[in-house]
Each structure stands twice: as C-alpha cells, then as structure tokens.
Length: 142
Length: 142
DNA sequence: GTAATTGCAAAGGTTTTGCACTATG
DNA sequence: CATAGTGCAAAACCTTTGCAATTAC
Image (cartoon, rainbow over all chains, first blue to last red):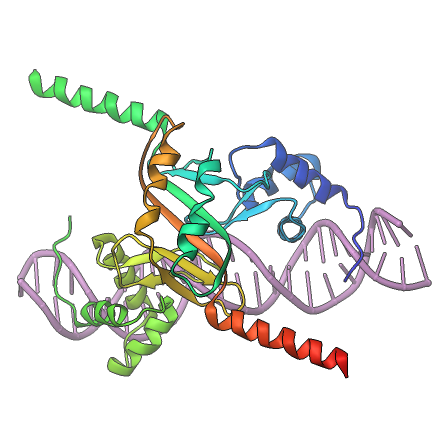
C-alpha cells in the first residue's frame, strides 16, 4: 500500500467539507479550492475526494441526480432532498438504524450497512408553496 | 403536455423490465432490445426509459455505482446490493416504510417518499467467503 | 533520492440532444 | 396530415487517467 504523504490541497479539501453542511459536488469544491490555489486542477480535486472517501475521512453520496455529492460528516446519518429546490440536508436518524435488522430478517445474506434518503418539500419550499396557493385563491376571487 | 403515441419499442422495453428481477442498466436493455429490433438506437432506449419512469411505469435506480439501473416493479420496496458481486436484489420491506414518520418527527418540511438501500454480502457470496476461509485454515495447518 | 502528489490535457463511460425520417392516430 | 417517436451521430456531462514536473519525507 502506498505511504500517504501530506498535501496542502488534500488538507484544504477536507477542512472545506467539514465547514459545509450543504453536501457540495466535486465542482463546487473545485471552485472553492481555486480561491486558495488558483492553479489547482479538477483532477486533483477528484483524486483527493476519492482518496479521502477511501480513508473514511469524508463520505461520498452517490445516487442523487447528476454529479456525486460529498459530506464532511462521516457519522452514519440520513439525508433529505427537497424535490423543489434540490437542496440536500442532514436528517436526525438515530432511530432509523434498526431497519438493518428489519431488512435482514428474511434475508439469507449479511447486511452490514445501509443508506436511507428521504424526499419531499423542505421547510422553506413548503412555505413558498402555501404562499402561492393562497395567492391563487385570491386571484380566483377577484 | 404532448399526447402519447404507441411505440413498439417502448412497449417491449416495459415488458422486458417486467420479466427481469435483476435491475438491468440501460445498456443491458439496449442489448436485449437489439435482439428484437436490430436497428434500435441507444438514444431510443434512454428516451423510453426516461419516459416510462416519468409515467411511473418503471423505476429508475440512480447511481448505485456507475450507470443507472431500472426496475420493472413500481411498488415501493427496498434494494440490497452485494458489495462482492455487485448484484442488486429486491428486499421485503413492508416493515420499513414507517421510517418516513421517524424521519419527519424533527423536520419542518414534508416527507413524501424515501429510498433505502442495504449493503453487505448476498447469500451466495457469504457461502463463498466461508468456503475460502475454511480453505485458508486448511492451508495453514499443512 | 525515492515515491507520492500535482497540473494539464486527453480519454473514458454514461446520458442527452438536434435533425431528418418514419410511424401513429 | 399533424406530431410523436425513431435512428444516427454529435455533444454534453461527470469522472478517471497518463505523463512530466513538483513536492514531501
């Protein structure tokens, strides 16, 4: 196995992800890294994101739409994605881990991990929608 | 909204997915459709998969790893992916739907759907691994 | 010095799209 | 005959990779 050497770029990428709660994509990480290292390349960002994920220091969130997202928080937790504004938010989910047991009950293999994602409207969009509905009603009255 | 017209290709794609339980990728669908329509194009397959998913007649399983997978079964259910052979299998999951309530408890928005995926070793791979472990032990003895 | 890491650019895999043509209703 | 759907090819998109130069140890 290759010995790990320090890299400023990798350290910055990790720190950046840890300060963000919005699960940025590789491209967003790249744009932000360019502010610190104007010559950094997208390849370096991808290589480091991949390496950090392998080391377990960040998490890669595949399977939302389009590009992968990255999460600086490595504790097992769930995500919510708003179908209106596409924001991805963390969700308290201690009480959910037990579904691994549920799922394993009628299953001959061995379940060691899971990923749960929730979809719907975030608080902000819910309010927006309610506002719009109210406006619709007013319009119909007049 | 555009009026829908019948298409043999689309019908075949839907039927094909309904006979399969292994969640094929677009490319696998394409290869199988070529047996029926030698001139069918990959673009047509993608367009129809996308259309069928929008109509709710199939389900798109985004990025487990690499290409998207498609599921002819549209009832809400969970999936298991074996980390050894990469097979994707359906999982009984009636008892899991309630996590939507759990997740909604401390959440200001509105949760309307979820997707849960499980990872680990499938029954076959579990047995393979046990066999290998046994062989290792024997080797060490002699 | 040796080997890991970088920047760059080219290539890879997957999916979408513009266009002229064909088939459905 | 109007227009949805098709095949083809090019492009778009996201990610990985080969290589020579740089940096860490």
